[in-house]
Length: 486
Image 1 (cartoon, helix red, strand yellow):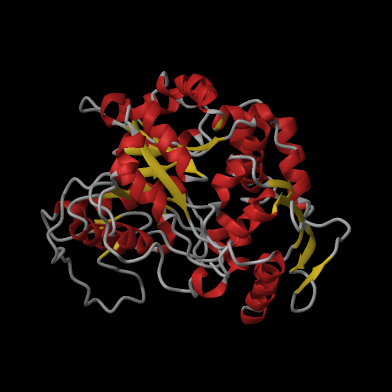
Image 2: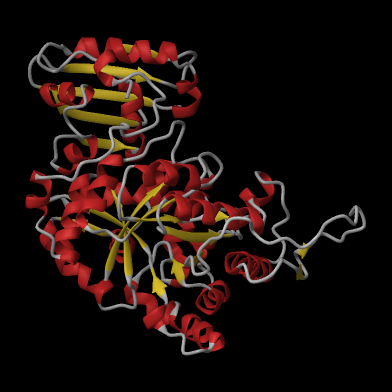
């Protein structure tokens, strides 16, 4: 079984975990995967990543098919493949009706037929055996509609690409999974539960492989799920990081009656929980939705807890048809632990002598560095950090709308104290004291807080080590870096 690293898509600002990506590259991970929804795209970050890595493959999980013509997708894939020395993995998906029609302004239509034609066109362009001609129910190339000029002509890519750039499809429902097994080189499942593979997916996969013919089998078909991995001695604390993620998809990624993730969880046998999650999420109670996610569901689709527990549960994936396990990591320690458990890598030795990387920084230069904004932990007092937060909010008034939350900080140690950061009211407010019913309460030691603010302490590593305690909406804690100016 190979390892990949899923980094997803960014929020209000581009946020690429280049430390984790470079480490995955050094440790022998097979691929890094980016995503897109209706903000950052999946391809531009891969170009940035490709310039700062040497061997890891570059995958999209996924590029939304309704957002691009098949020809544009093929052009993009060939270009990035050549620039990266043949490392491109083209992951495609349909997204859902809310995004397709609400963001891209395209009809959702009949997804199975569209997907089949789309992949066929992309492969024809990759092969470059003849000028592109396609007459299908969904795509006509050259265009021959009533409003056509009649001047379109069959063309062949100027750029000579690899004919065998791997194509992956994201799929959840049985018919889509069957199609992926038939026409794609790999399948990108989300919330994959290996214990339920036989009952939920196997028939569809087997049918697709059989239809493909030509000896296609599981041996040549890459099943590559994204799996959250949280290494933490406190199993409940680890699960608490996964629950908001599950609640978002099961509760909010789709309308009632048209949510593929809700349907999947129901097929796993968690319909009662899925109903509670969706009801609370659609009512605006995101914290309650996360609380409704059962521990048992988290354990089916994620690896949570101390290293020994993860090693024990890893067998579920290793004994399934999964061929590439794409780690969704919250800190670099998870990247290393999985390399040790799956790849047998001595990460301690590799960390002591890391490979050189281009000096291009960990992210595009979008904001001032922490060094210019925050005083070091040796010199600072907590008040200085909160003063800096107020400065950041004043500089970036959009934070109030983009974060829209009230933070309660409880600092222990010397001098300690309580502070409120209100990003719901007016232009935002930072003050000493407490508040009733904050969206999230963060408790930590003074020294650790100062180290976190100055960039000397990684937030997810601190959480895993028990240095940060979070109550309420855990995902809001990930917004801290923007408050610190990082």
